Every structure is written in C-alpha cells, then in structure tokens.
Image: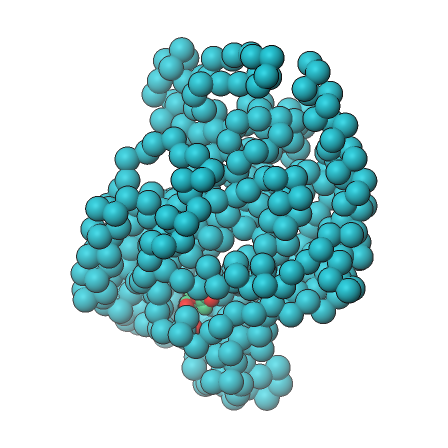
Length: 385
Ligand code: EPS
C-alpha cells in the first residue's frame, strides 16, 4: 500500500511529504518531478505569488543512486516567498500583530477553522488551508506517475469550463490529450472556448471577481481489476472521489456520466459488452467512466471535478470581525483570479496516486521487478480468458 503525509505552511520555509510503500528499484529522474511542478504553476489567471515561486523538488531520503530503496521517500519544496515572511512565520518569537487576519473570507476555511482550533489570528488557519500545499502533492503524484509509466498507464487532464464558458464533451484518445493541452494557457482543447475563457478571466480581474470551472481527468490503459466491490473502502471510484474532492475548492466530483446518469433510462446509462479474440472484452461507449462495482473495467477512467471560484475577492463580500463582531468587508489577501488550470494538474496528480496505490495493492509493491512479474502473469491470464 502507498500512503503519504504532507506538512508545511503557505509562507513557511518549505513543504514536505513523506511517501511510504513505494516499491524498490524504480529509476527516479528529478526532472520529471520538476516538470510536473512547473505544469502546476502555469495557467492564465494566477496571481503574483507564482512569479515568486519556482518550485523544485529536493529528495531527502528513500532514493540512492537514482533508484528507490523501498524505504520512505522524503520530498521537499522550498517556499521562495519565505524570505518575505520570515518574521511573520517564524517558529519562535512572532509578535502579536504581525499580518494578523481577523476578517474571515466567506468560502474560505478562515471562520470555521478559527472556531475549530481556537485561533484568534485567522492567519493560523489560512497558512495551512492554502492551496499552496498542493505543490508537494503534485510532487507525490509525479512519483506515482513514474511508477504507473512502468505499466504504460498515463493520466492526463484538460479544462472543460471556466466562468461558464464550456467545451462540448467528446470522447478523447490518449494522443489527443498531450501537447494540445500543454500549449493552451488555460489547459483547454477548444480554441474558441479558450479565447472566451481568457476574456472572462480578464473581465473578472477588472471587476475584483474570481472564477471557478470544471476539468476532466482521464487515466489511459488501466487494467481491469483495480479496486474491489467487496468492501466500501476498497472501491476504486470511492477512492478517486475522495482524492479529487480533497483538492482545495473542489465542490463536486463525478465518474463517467455521473449526475447525468440519474436522468437516463437504464438502456442509455450503461455500456453494452463486446468480445473479440484479438481485443478481449471491450465497450463501444464508456458511460461508466471505466469503473463498475468499484472495480476498473479496462476502459479509460474518466473523472470530472467542479471547482468553486476562489474565495479571496478584491471586491470582498460582507463579513464579521472575528474579535469585535463588527460588520466588516472580508480580508483581501493577494490571490489568483482562477486556479482551474492548476487544479487540473493537481487532479491528475491525485488520480495518479490513487491508481498507483491500487496497482501496488493488486500486484504487490516491494520491488518493481516483483510487481512487473505479477502484472505480466495477470495480463496473460486475462488474455487467455
Ligand atoms: C492561495 C493564495 C495565493 C495563491 C496560493 C493559494 O497565495 P498568496 O496568498 O501567497 O498570494 O498563489 O497558491 C500557491 C501559493 C500555489 O503554489 O499554488 C490560497 O489562499 O489558497
């Protein structure tokens, strides 16, 4: 089983993750991880913070001579902005009023977090609630991607909508999703919609507004048989939903047709089963999004997520002062207009992690050689069904 923890504040010294259960013997190229970190930092609509940061991973344990050891892997990303926050965020000796936050932003963790942890300064909440934490989750996801790559599994995402401008859903293949998405400043495959989105972001910025949106994550060449129907916490779709929902600002997740399937007749909601000797079992449609009964069925896994607009508005909503209880405007922190393109990269990372974990569970995760032996044996069995 693969698992990880992360630590670190948004303006603290660094973000750290400990990744445990990663098989031994996997070659790790740090550039692959750094490339994923750079992809997350891009996207039209981000704020000034992304000009300060240049995320780079440092691997502090679990890798020797470029290969994983099977022991816990420590990943660290330093916050360059820490230089500007050293006093405010210092481990000891912070003065009482250093950049205190007392006007909770509707939609942010500020108020609920302050009540829960008994903080008077809501900075103590927002520093950890900040989506900055996702940088190190993307580093973990990059490690998962490297592992999945050994089994020819690839996870790719693209933006479906931002601020209400939306691409029409169509079935995409693995080659269609690569470079075209990378070349779009909003990770959108439709050029007309891309233009509309950019206009909407510019308008929102000039009005002190923020925008949400939706994105789709596809996992290609996942074998049938990951996850299980036998118990609730072994269901692959449940794990995917949990992982994607855990990305800050995600308010909805669906797999395949998702909510739309509730409105269809049974005959229009499922995928008829075909068989050809050369292909094995296959479907002409993929309404299930690659998961049936909590188990991958061999079709592309398709997950969609809805992200709410970022709560920090430069024209803020009414709020209440956390201490004096006076009516005030919510606090204005430097922020982004939209982070949907970044969330799409984070979505890829968390989906990759879930799939890598399920690969380890099914095929054994002590060494890559053992996993590959088990995988090949399973493929032979499936081919001869
Ligand atoms: C964030 C607020 C902004 C974003 C940040 C998430 O940071 P700051 O308050 O420092 O300007 O830029 O995102 C990142 C730092 C990142 O790496 O994605 C928030 O409140 O969630």
